[in-house]
Length: 353
Image 1 (cartoon, rainbow, N blue to C red):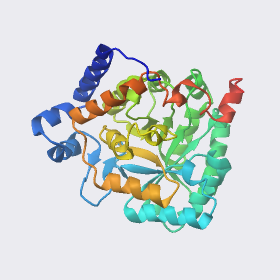
Image 2 (tube, one colour):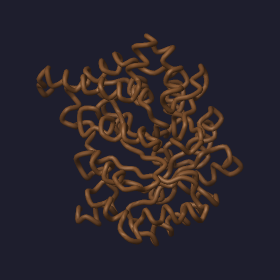
Image 3 (cartoon, rainbow, N blue to C red):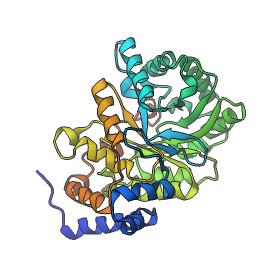
C-alpha cells in the first residue's frame, strides 16, 4: 500500500531542493537562460560539465585534479560477473571506442575477478583511460591497505592507479578507524608519495553523516563517491548534505546507484532509465558510476549520455514530487538503512551475521 504523505511535507522538500539548486548555481542559470539548451553552456562554466555535444560522451573535470573524465564511469562490479572473458573484454573495448574513459573497480569485486579481467582488457589501452580501484574493508589499517594496493596493481597489470579510494565507509566508527594511527588514510598518502596512485578518495552508501565525519578531517581527498538518485533527496540525502560540501571544497563528486542499485523502481515503472540517469547527470558531479553487464545496457546508457541536456529546475522538482510518495520511507534505498548491501568482511568486523 502506498503511504499517505502530507502535501505540505512534499512541498517543504521541494522548496528545500530549490534552495539547494540555487546554492549550487543551477537555478539561477535556468532562470536567466530559460531552457536546457542554453543551460548546458552555463553548466559548462559553473559546474564540472564540459563539452556537451550531440553524439559525444560529455567530459567533466575530476575536481581540482586537472583531469577530464567521461560523465559515465564504467562500473566493474556488474561487468565482472560476465562469465565469458571474451564477451566482457569486447564490452569494455566498445565503451572505450564510444568515448568512455573512466573505469571503476575494487579489490574485492567478484573475488578479484573484476580487477584481473579489467587488467586483461586494458592491455595496450591503459593510457587511454582513467583507472580507479578501491581498498576494501579488510584494509582499515595501513599495512593491509598497501598490500591490497600491490595486489590490485598486479591484477590490473599496471604500475599506477589514477584514483585509489577507501571502499564502503558505512559504519559510524569507520572514520575513526581510517584516521587512527597507521590507519587506511596513512596508506593513501604513502601510496601517493610512492607514485603508485595519482589521486585519493573514499566511498560509502549508508548515511551522509558518515561522509561528513570523513570530510571533517583536514585531509586532501581528491574524490568522494556516494549514492545519488531521484529518491535520495527525501531520505538520508547525500544530495542535500554532502554534495554542496564537495563542490565548495573542489573535491570531485562521483555518483552511484542512480537506479538504486537493483533497478527495482525501473522494473516497477516508477521511473524510466533516461529520466533517472539524466537527473543525476544534471547535478554538479564529475561522473556517474554505472553498472554495465551487457551490450544492451551499455548502448542504453551511452545513448542517454550522448543526448544529455541538463534538466531544468522545474523538471527536477516535478520528477522528485512524482516519486516522493515512494521515497520518504527509503524503500528503494535499503542500502542506507540495512546491512544486506554491506560487504561480508565489514559485517564480520562489526559482529553482524
